[in-house]
Length: 275
Image 1 (cartoon, rainbow, N blue to C red):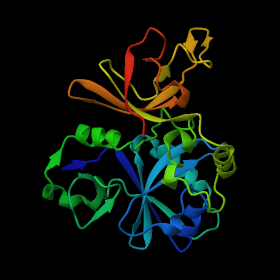
Image 2: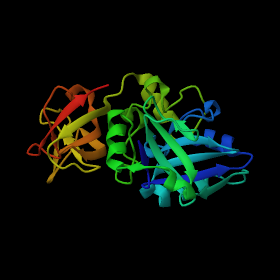
Image 3: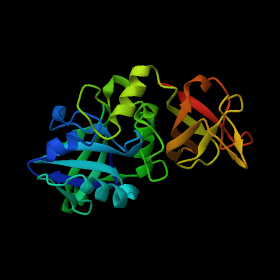
Image 4: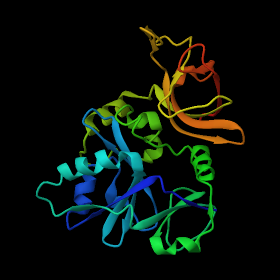
């Protein structure tokens, strides 16, 4: 299956210092990136919270950063701010290339995300070569693969460990040098297991990105005025086969408890798996 990912932005980072620049800005080891794979990278602020989650690829002599389109206006100028005197150019090439999600398909221009999913970067003029399926099919495949996203609603609210990016160092390399937020992320890692992780849920009720997860038995659940302090947050969501599916963070100690949406009277969410 092929899906047009028209909801994603694409930045091209080029220049003699592009690799060094990205190595100093992102959470993974850019030096280990090959030409056929997508590398997951967190772009953090100095408190260790994720501004954006990039799919990074080598493309000719440059690098491509793919991420949700709603973050483009904030992320591009922020990256540009740190170029300073380096030989680095950051271009918005969203309108120049097709980004196509591939599910269980082989293609010569594909960058492998995992065993099931790949990302194809192709020229816009080649769009008629692909028989495109619904974006919902891609979204449910990403949720089933526990592949998280950061959107505008969830930017600067979560650290990499909450998205399981530290597990097998899939999105965070703890041996590389410094990057924004590195001290906080490393400190959390060496203090031990994370208290909040990424899980998959389903519900009959409508879900929205940024919605809170609530557990009445949580020791940290509090009411502030008419607002509840949640025990987690929804990151990805899609309606598929009459049910809503989502990836959401949740306090690990609560996985066997009843989880509701936004408050104690909200609809129930059922955990699907907890890898």
